[in-house]
Length: 183
Ligand SMILES: [Zn+2]
Image (cartoon, rainbow, N blue to C red; front, side, top):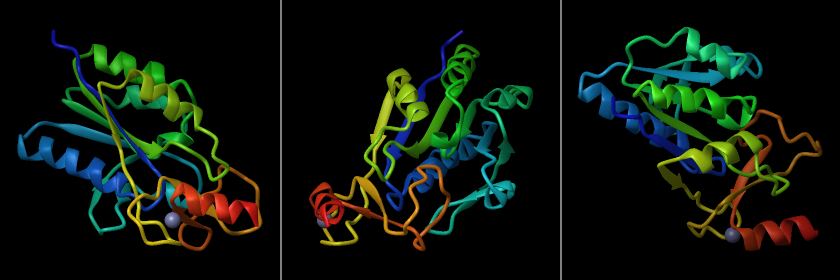
């Protein structure tokens, strides 16, 4: 049996990671192949049974508390998707390997770095296993160049796992990140 392929989409917030993931889902949909999307349960925002891109695309998704829970739902799909992988436990790497050995493709999307410039461990593990890595960029909130690779948090709260949007975060390039963090 052919092994599945692992694709990992990373980047800062507002870089279109979820849009990219949903574009992949579209490929399976057009090919009339079954797929399932999973996302982590983090807070009430994440209990919704769907994922949405900032551009307005959406798909239904199953919220799960632990990465291994995904395997209880898997049947005859051709592809399995995980969004917001930085919020999953590190066992997701082993779950993804087992799914690949079943001959299914796995597409993951998530933040690679926290606003403190630290790699997210689960994302890092997945990047090592990937056949294909897509590193997305955002438009820098400060200088407007298309080279934003890190999320900057401008509210006074140090937690690296803190769900939010424009109320807490924007994406910047590393030069602007350096200026902002030196202030
Ligand atoms: Zn910049």
